[in-house]
Image 1 (cartoon, rainbow, N blue to C red):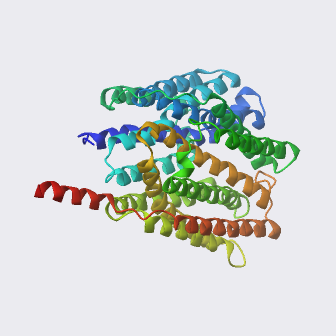
Image 2 (image 1 turned 30 degrees about the vertical axis):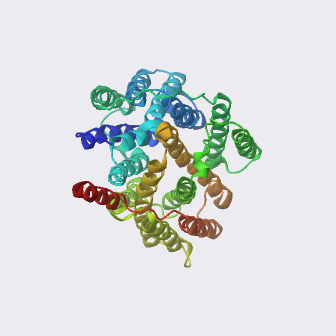
Length: 469
């Protein structure tokens, strides 16, 4: 491919979109009590400010991924900033809870336009021997954006009211829109494949049902309603897979499970996201309610994970581009498993054990995710890269959904009713034990990854042949 000279500069616009869309998942969490008081509603009602955004993203990601492969994905990505900024402005000016929820749905559509194409844009910008480094930077942004939302929201609330959390997206979105239109490489015309409307709808509804069950189950624990939501979502997923096997151009594209490298990459990504989400939520509540740490201390402890991920990801991306992906992904999953033992083993749950777990898990995911994403996107057919990228993003949310459900099942509800008891501590330790075995299963599946020759070696070999000619 012809090298794009300003590709590293363009990558920062891609990263800006990734950061904005992932940050807004959690940035409003700290202002929910304030909103509830201002609009005279319950916390359960105001929770829809968060839930509506997530539901919209998981519903639209596969649809927009498929659509982007039919059109100019650079335009869809760029105009995603405009839709996101528009939703943010409406939210900032809203005077009712209903208006804010509608604005968050608009934000979710814009975020889906961005997230469904962010990995694809990186694939378009960079040759294969550089994609590891580029996606390593993107992986850091995803992690920092996802985990730092509440901290950033709390900091901004110290200097302004809740509307500022949305206003700040408007200038950033408009700047990114202008830069995207000017800088992003345009797509050539491609053959139009039929849009799988039935499969896309089934995937959207099933994922939304599962996410709704996870969000409600986090505070309510398992009850009849939660089980019904999970059961209906799971059944619809089974029917979706049966349906997708019968059509040639489905939203669950056959390349996702017939290509061995892609199948290994997606399945291990799902497992590691399950392990992360199932343990990060209960340990956060444990620090708040049992160890009685103030919010600032909890935030600093949780920051260990993205910090170590940020340190490790660039190194892993460089290693993948030079030597290959096989060993770092195995090592990353193994380190994540070892980190679980610092909480699962011993007589109790100690602060030093939590700190070691968070630090090592950050190292492990830093080694794993950037390389794994690069391997998946490198295997994606050029006419399906947005669909593959959107499914990669959707898998993160599936991991979150399954992880929350597993945490609720094994550790119980994690709202204000959680108590500092020996039984509760034992449940969390057991949950981390399960997390260890999930990471171990990830290691075993990583062993099935094809051992491909490093891309840098291929590039150097090609250059030597051309030089000799």
